[in-house]
Length: 102
Image (tube, rainbow, N blue to C red; front, side):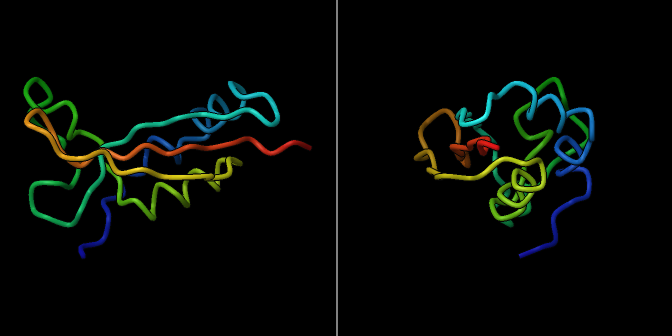
């Protein structure tokens, strides 16, 4: 599987976005976050072009990388569910994250 692009993780590595994610949840709160995931195929990594027609592919994450990024943001991954492929799209995952109580 190819290495993830540094760009793919830039959203969660940005300290101001981490702070927003942490501030939105109260201790013990839950967040359901849906991402487009990179499965290693040529067409799944994030792209820096074609925003008008491919906005969903602008930021995609490898599943283990997003899990680790969520932990670095102070959130605890509780569960993940891969959304079944359908006629409209593919490669979506839903993460259930919690903010630990102090």
